[in-house]
Length: 481
Image (cartoon, rainbow, N blue to C red; front, side):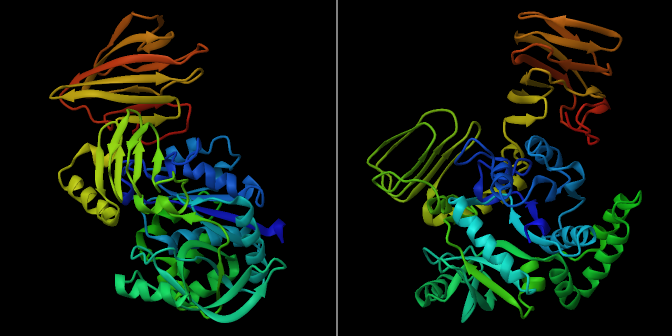
């Protein structure tokens, strides 16, 4: 059945409880946490031993689509396999769209649904569990992967398993029938679930036949199913973009768990044999990260004296800690978080306060990755902004213009090829040029080393949406630099 196995990777959401590392425009799946790959890169790498890249579909939102495509540029996922949602409507519409596309491509298609921002520690154990799930799904069971609770967590949904064993592999990995799904419980209830030994955390990882999940969607969410059928009729036609807009305009915002799985009768759970974390908050890193002898998780340039059971994360500069117990310390270039581990869920409330204040620290990092390189905001104030722009060898920004700002560029490393209206010329180290308001301009790097440019912007409005893109190498149509 491997020839009929597909993966759908869900790459939406902002991960507000993982602030300050995650931001609204730079969510968890785009971050490097425990390796030199981002979480979405790790997710694709994890599934490709079973599923070739041409059978991997990625569902993402419009505001993250460019960054997701850029991060997966070398993974071999076809451009047509990126399903871009115009607005987020939770997981049922996203999974339904992907299932409809797969069913029409392959009537026997089986789908492994993977969130893009989870960490799984043992790839071999993961593959073993997926192979068992494929055998169960062939009988039109909807399969979930449950995580044995390590603590009475109130931030996860739970799955209660029946004693009924549906299938067991030769190495005693089992699939059990699901008795019920339970929404996020209060603490006393969560403690009772953990003591019983009959409940598992709902990992959000699923496996099922495309036709099976659509049949259950038809029973439980008939209006959504009708919209999916209309959308399916127009997939791979010139009217697809319009059909997607109309489907999401009318689609109910509902999760696949609540909308379909809780009502279905043939649902199975496989107790996962691998270590897992959705890193929904900083405390959850303990599930998968290595710890020192005192039980601390230390990531980055950390210097600690006598702390215990704490999570310490440093992005760039040295973070020094003394005598902390069960604390979280996270330091990034523009924000630092300090809180007790048992208050890690409350980080979401901090993000809400930042959003109310329209603070940039909620929206984006000082350093922003782009297909051509990156830019870092050093300083900004009324009427001015100072950036460092780095362009990788062979990279170039879009040919663009601004209505409300002028720019001044100074090269600090490398050689810059500059287009400014009809002029095309090179700038070397310690040379500069002015880009007048309204001029069509482009910056590119034809050299073999990284180009560094200090950019000073002046104008009444300096937002990143003051861009008119005239030409672009990366297929971007949105107003982004």
